[in-house]
Image (cartoon, rainbow, N blue to C red):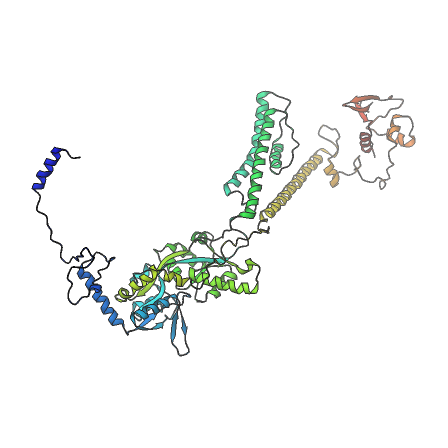
Amino acid sequence: MATGLELLVAAALCAACPGFNDTLPDNLIRINEEGNMVTELPVDVEADMAGVTDDAPVETLETILNKKVKLRALREWINGQHLRIATLEDYPLSYTELLENGTRVGHGVSFQLINFLQEKFKFTYEVVVPQDNILGSTIDFDRSLVEMVNKSFVDLAAAFIPSLSEQRSFIYYSTTTLDEGEWIMVMRRPRESASGSGLLAPFEFWVWILIFVSLLAVGPIIYVLIILRNRLSGDGVQQPYSLGHCAWFVYGALMKQGSTLSPIADSTRLLFATWWIFITILTSFYTANLTAFLTLSKFTMPFNTVNDILTKNKHFVTMRGGGVEYAIRTTNESLYMLNPMIKNNYAVFSDATNDTYNLQNYVNLNGYVFVRDRPAINIMLYKDYLYRKSINLKDEKVHCPFALAKEPFLKKKRAFAYPIGSNLSELFDPELLNLVESGIIKHLSARQLPSADICPQDLGGTERQMRNGDLMMTYYIMLAGFATAFVVFTTELLFRYINGRHEANKWSRHGIGRATNGRSFKPSRWLRALGHIKGGEGQLLGTSTHANHVTPPPPYQSIFNQGGGEQLQRWRRNPGLVLPDEKNGAGVRRLINGRDYMVFRNADGHSQLVPIRSPSAALFQFTYTD
């Protein structure tokens, strides 16, 4: 609430204010309380021609009158006029039919609009088409639609022409935008989802990388911790495992296999248990996500955006001279990044106006991606669906061999075109705007299509059978395992051969059967198997002695008694062993390392152990066989 001082100041200021001005501006249209107009209009102008409506723009009366007068003059002029209208073969939006008498008749959404304008403004028209069915540009101007409009060969271009920056210098687009055109990619429907292989799908890329790193790192970490623990604690009970044993334990746990390692120390047991718990949780998550992926995963396409086409160098085809081609060739357009693909022959611009031909020839046979505006693609796929369903009534995958990408390849506003300086735009565009705002143009574009979605990206089948594509990673792992095993086997043979050569060279330097100190030794089994040593003292296991006329050894028990006959005497002459006789005396039975031996004295005075247990005795008998 104002104080008394503030009221006094306000009264003083009001006394200095100028008087109230009740005069109105010129040309102002006045309306009384009942809504009737009280301003007097010129005598030769009707009230309804003055544009005085509830939604009239705030303009001066002179501007309104001039516009109305001009429109009335245009209506009078066009009444009975014969127009030349150009168009493109762009089914279903605009296409023509050549009659037997040589007359060309226009069809499609564009000419439904033209026919509406014809009925309203009472004009006649003839349809012409450019020599080449192309829109036209700076480098592709001849025989094009843009050339016909630019040189005023026609009065109007009735087609859904995309609004491109380069064409604005040649033609005048209508102020009313008919629609926002969307060019969509259509491709062959893949047999499996593009989200990844069935075995790799449960985890993303970096999860697999971390699992692989942990598989390589945990084994050495456990090995180092065990060594460090033993050295710090001085515990000799827990023997340290080798690095190979630790690495194989980590891999075996990942494959849900057991381990022969049995740690005693509590800290070592915790290390092993930690890895087991980690693997158990990891494999449980993998199994659950793999089941969900194979049954409930959302189907995705391999090519959904322009970047997919660019990064994967995918061949694509589109209409020759259409909006997509000029958007790729024009520098300041969004698709100019695809321009290098034209030079590398990844982009094909087809002259065929038959979409079915392009679909079958490029997409179905060659696997290309076909880029076309949405109305044409939808009608084309719908007709293909009806044809295939008439052949096969049951298999939905046969009905829909093609699929659409979700993201538009290109978006552009589309409109009619006029020659520069033409005043037909002022007459036709307001009527076209009424049709756009009422949704009639959108209705006409989709009139031939059913309300249901035909051949969606995800067919929504409930069954999900495993295919080879889901098991490809399994095949790769198996091949990699066999290849690795073969490489390791080859490496073993190579090292065995190198070691054998090294051992053979040592024998050749020091004499067969003699070392540098003069003592005798036996060659390795490898050298004996290769036949490097001939005439050796021993006989290989499993080799028959009949070919060498070797008398079988006497019974083992006869060695420890005085019987045996000639065979025993022959065995007594072995210079390397002195058997019990009257000269040397009987051997002494000893229990060594839990096994029974007979101890005898050799010729050089050293003691010789003769095993008594049956398996060891058999080996002893084989060793001393001629």
